[in-house]
Length: 174
Image (cartoon, rainbow, N blue to C red; front, side, top):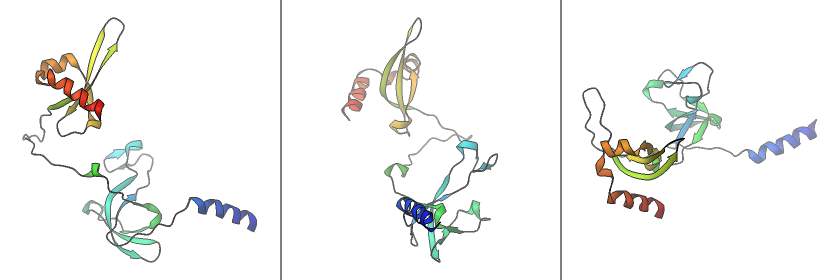
């Protein structure tokens, strides 16, 4: 029995890494998905696995940490075990830039296309459809969506012309 336990421990220790945080570190907090429970406004597979980023206030013992929770979670005890914490790795895409938006009274705003990123031609049974990958203002290139070129030419004629060739050349060069 001791031999089997020792063997299993050696396998587990290869994948295990010690987690230690200090006061002021930024982390994510793991939330357990429960079937049929709506968490943070989303239900099922779309519910978040981690919430945060949150700040560690202090270390309590060797495996517990006190976390600064947002006011919406004021009913939750703020001390958590190290196994349900995940280190936050800073990423430039997490930094949001706020530009002035013309927000209407009903809290909506008008989206305007910024540029055409790519263009493809789809063959349907009896006709060909041209689609443009359009990057919208206040969105990244990854969030660009495919639109029918005919619709875009009617709604946004300023996107077509010399600028189209420059946009496509820019994307393929980078």
